[in-house]
Figure 1: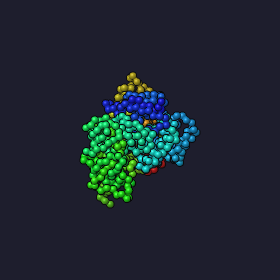
Figure 2 (figure 1 turned 180 degrees about the vertical axis):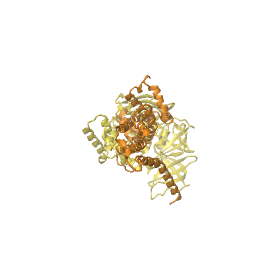
Figure 3 (figure 1 turned 30 degrees about the vertical axis):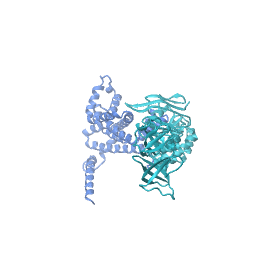
Figure 4 (figure 1 turned 90 degrees about the vertical axis):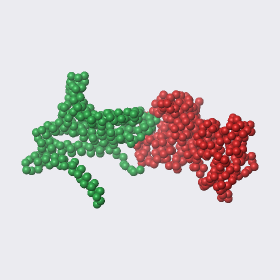
Length: 375
Length: 260
């Protein structure tokens, strides 16, 4: 049985359904991220686990015990907030010891535990400082120590890195992951940053409009997105509209150019489907290894340093592709005619195809931090 | 010097003059009890038991007023901000009522409701009347206390701090007294200063409830001994300021201030 289990969770505010039929089973010691844009319901689910919101329907169990009727103070679930939420009137040591004091832990034992926690977050020298004397990164580490000091069953992290500088964000997320592994604590991490989610999670729940659009390991989410939304939100992606030519041979036509895919689909000949292609899966030039080739005109060349991003236009649609910078091979010039090559298995057929028109077909969709991922 | 700053200085001087002139006049008058010479003769009244008792009584009532109003206002503001933000305009209106309703109206209301032949005869004994006086002062202090604490609490992320404390196992009492109250301490203090000043100077309610506060004592003295009354005013003014200063010293946030 799963350690933390959410079954058919529904949450409505008035007539708005923020979370719809949400199911999730988390194993003990697992690190699960909720990834999605703002308003997708990820924070609401987290707050229901913490007890700050009551589910309108459904059940939440920890170790088989129903907890949805318990107030937050009785759940023994640690939480770290985006705004740190350290108590401004207490020192770092008192903040970390706050939960232990409430639990009636004797002073000597409490002091030892506080010292141990400060050691773990590598800030033992700051026990007597007040929160306002610390940097954002330090405050968030103290908040983490405070949440973990009481040995909670589950740790919830609500966008803990969003208020921090880019560099600290990366180093702190690595620290959080290392600490989580060290303590073996079951953790739920909420973020809208796909790079963050991909880099630190055991599993990712991509959320969209109150539902789990896809649940899977980062590798799986990135390489085999199930829906157009997941494909567009995670990473940078070309979403194209294709017409089915031959269902049996899995032949499609994109802007009049024949291509094949190795992924099966159910659409009939003449129907339109949405397909996706990662920029790093496409190359320039003709090859003889059974790849698809599409001839087009170079519309834009962006030199990003180690990577060169080229946008190639066909009739109505474009494909963005990434090639590594090669001093011996200058990037193509704008207006040049080139061939875009990609393997049939890299052409992903998206579920829900044309109905979920979040983006214009034939445009590359950039997730918020796509550039950092490529740089 | 620029013209604009000359204008500013003139305005400040007029303001200071306007505020200090009556005070200086009172001081000067209080020193003229003996004909033809300045002396502290009028200040001998400070040695009387009547003065000391009435002033002590007012001080105690003032401190109790502060404590009671903090206990009423802090949880009210907290719940309005956290759970019932829609009630804010209504609560604000209620807290403003004491400014709109004159003290004389309030005290006549009290006398009608709580007279010795009513269902709750609070005016029946001196102790019960003191309690009534205290509650009247809490009502008078409400606009100042509420505004001070409300604006103080808006600068604190009440919701997140509450949730952080809850997730660490804190109950409501712990949250209010160890998390919220210490973080609005300076707001509570500024409310307390105003409350203190109001209570020390209050006359109407105390007089009609016949309580021996400083205000009624001062009025009695003033009726027959103008020099002594001026001396008392000066001293009361000084003591009130000193008390506020002390509250600030002892109640202040003692953490060192460091710029971010």
